[in-house]
Amino acid sequence: MGRNFNFSAGPAMLPAEVLERAQEEILDWRGSGMSVMEMSHRGREYMSIAGQAETDFRDILSIPDNYKVLFLQGGASSQFSMVPMNLLNRKGEAVDYLNTGAWSKKAIAEAAHYADVNVVASSESTNFSSIPAFDDWNLNSDAQYFHYTPNETIGGVEFHWTPDVGDVPMVADMSSTILSRPLDVAKYGVIYAGAQKNMGPAGLTLVIVRDDLIHEPIAGTPVMFNYVTLANSGSMYNTPPTYAWYLAGLVFQWIKEKGGLAAMAEINQRKAKKLYATIDASSFYASPVDLNCRSWMNIPFTLANPELDGEFLSRAAERGLLSLKGHRSVGGMRASIYNAMPEAGVDALIWFMQEFEKDRA
Image (cartoon, rainbow, N blue to C red; front, side, top):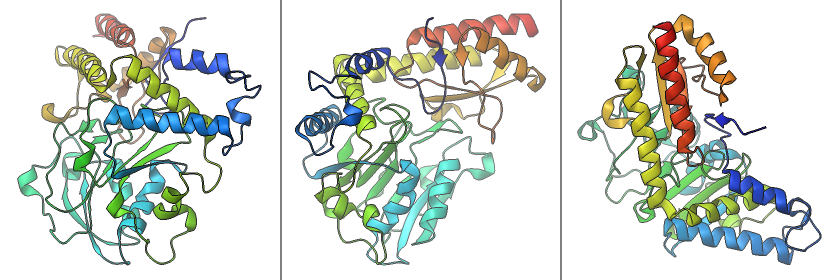
């Protein structure tokens, strides 16, 4: 039985080559007589796996030496609390947040437990279909940091530019955009991302944090939320998600073999461009997102007649096109086309969309 094309927003499909490599090594990793899942995280074999994964990740992103990389648990959502806990000097200090969608709102709500949150701008009045014009942002030069979400997974709104907020450290939730294209890490103070979209399976979260931002957190911060503890222990204060870390390492090797982030960007842009072209060429389908901020990774679209949504999804599933239902808060359809989605999968979706339109328009 062949593999289907899984358009899930996460956990998303993984490269077939990565799964095949993991399958080969699952019982006996390179003559060790053990599965990676059975290894001590402090043993020689596993330390080599973890070290190589970090080396490859740093190489792919050209991460400067004055940044730590943390391999953590808790999902990106745990960073909604951990960022203010660690970047503030004390509770109640001022921070800036941009609100461009559901994940921004969740981050803002968590930060409000620890900080005086200034929402610099919001696109909620346009149902999160756009990004507020930079000139309209109410930035605070005294903020401890500025936080934004470069790609909103649910709404399909994405930045195609990097904000300039001066000397204020910039924090970004890059869960659904990291490793999809080149990135200038040096422009950021903290980057965090759940792995289950472009990096590996669910259960692993990566945090890239500049050294000068690693200091004693606010009083009462649990030890497992303390960047100092996690950095000083090499992400191994407790047992990390070892198998997810290993699989992420295989993904990093796969990206390097494919030509790195420049090659990923070329493929991803081409996939997104042809799918948007299909949507825009039709009166049967529509994109709810403004043209200048459409995501390469998460592409929502609607049918002119919502009563056909169920039939569209069932017929798509029969063709092996899975997980196309839009998020419950938005409706319609959503095609997530991360790195591991082959171009053939996008082509198959386009062919089906055109065929369905001919049948039902």
